[in-house]
Image (cartoon, rainbow, N blue to C red; front, side):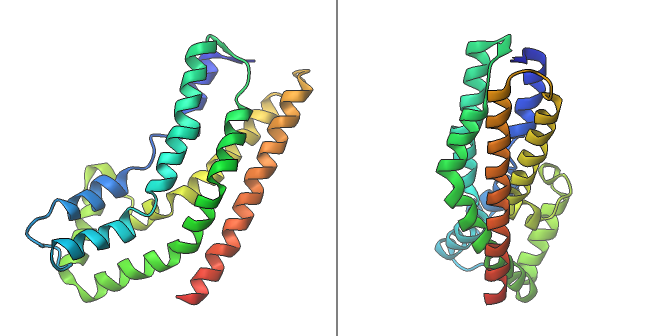
Length: 205
């Protein structure tokens, strides 16, 4: 079992606050700019550019929210102050969202190229990216951090769950520990799958 105060710390670390910087700092500002001030063409062209490049992580965000964050919070409320297990929620999440991470890894290099290419030829867009770095929501992290944040978060999940499993050594709950160990291996495998997909798509750019 996991005590309530421990769970209060674990859930934010697992789910984070969901890196929404790319939405608030970049996507929304382009979509809401009716004047075309960023040099991306008419409103339809600007919308398509924002959707194709800055909204690429939305499917993973929603998968994490509905398959991880919300179920974890629900279980915390229903089982508190002691939470019995959570590996099954993660297992369901990785089964249903695996393909989204592989797709994101394969698309990232092309998205990165499109944004950099546009910034090189479009001074107004380049200034827009620089302004995003200064925006309070961005925490001074560049746009490419938010584009690849799903892959960064995968690695955080792995590190966190490995630390939890180590803390549980000697707990006497062999079934729970075995399930956690299997889950960690699944996440490691997904990270390994995303790596070659990222490298292969980089070669095609």
